[in-house]
Length: 97
Image (cartoon, rainbow, N blue to C red; front, side, top):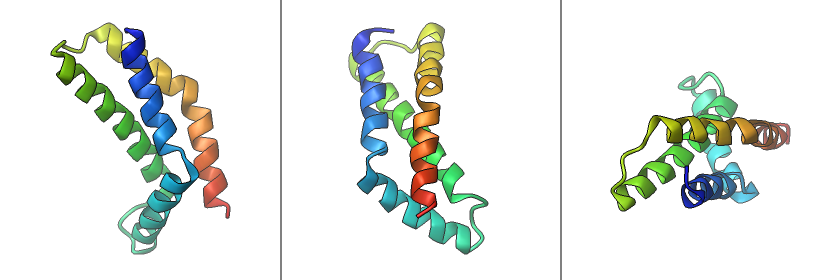
């Protein structure tokens, strides 16, 4: 995967794990959890962050008009794997407040 594509994914994650963005999402997902629509606000938040990173990546690839290769998808997963503990820790820290 080219450095720009990796940077797009990293930037998406960075944008999503800011305290302000996390709080907005958490409040919404917590309300849905309390109303019985979600089993876990924390898991929903993780899914949102994953989806946003993937959307940024897909949009970048659409803009460049290059198809997404299997190698790029594997690299996408490695970026997520590398940051999963950071993401989950920030979500759980917010949840504990």
